[in-house]
Image (tube, rainbow, N blue to C red):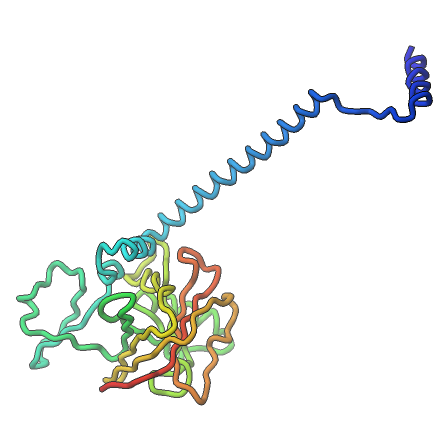
Amino acid sequence: MDELIRKQLQDSRLEHPEFKFRVPTMARGTISRQILNMFSEHIHLLLVFLIIFLTLMIVANWKSFSVIADDLLGNVPVNQQIGIQQRYESPGGAHVMNVSDNDEDVNDADLGEAVLFPPDYRLEIPQLFEGTIPINTVNDEYVDFANFYDQAENIIQQKLQMGVVRYPFTADPGEHGNVFITGHSSNYSWAKGDFNAVFALLYKLKKGDEYSIYFGGKKYTYRVFAHFEVEPEDVSVLHQPLDRKMATLMTCTPVGTTLRRLIVQADLVRVED
């Protein structure tokens, strides 16, 4: 019987060369629906994964996203979010204390006639926050060149808990070269430190904006001339020009990730006592 069927099929092909096997219309429709259903399921799973991922990222970095949201809505001063501290000194100079901007235990009566006294090494960016933040340094003599990156990175991460950090072996304000300052744009909500969102709004700085560094009893003001992103391993931004007095601010971007580095470069435009 099987041989007879095969012979009939062969004879049919010889008599009708145009004969080809075709999937029935109903079968073709079924296959198309199966492919669409499979594609839809994959898209659904991808969307669920993205929603879960974004939710976890926002929760883990809630302070930075809170700063950005409050800035967009204009709800509260940013300095209340990132824990900026200001140092006050009485006119006679006998009484000095550190006062947090959101410290409810300190009132105007406690300050009396106190005036703002900028400490020796602090950063001021009026477009991003009120007040000033500490600039911490890494002592160059304690950095071992044989193990520079690992050792320096550990020290910098510790210093970032107390403010921003001047990168080792870069210039100080007033010197020819590049004052290179790095700070957190975000960090895990459980990480130590009051400055984990200090540079969350750094992306807002554009060409022509100014920021200042207090150092050695003087105020050094810089004007932004460049705003760009680089890969994490790009060390060209640490270049120290011998014929220029400039400063660079760096942070991770996008906020909540360490994928790239946001760079803001500025030239020194004036020095005030």
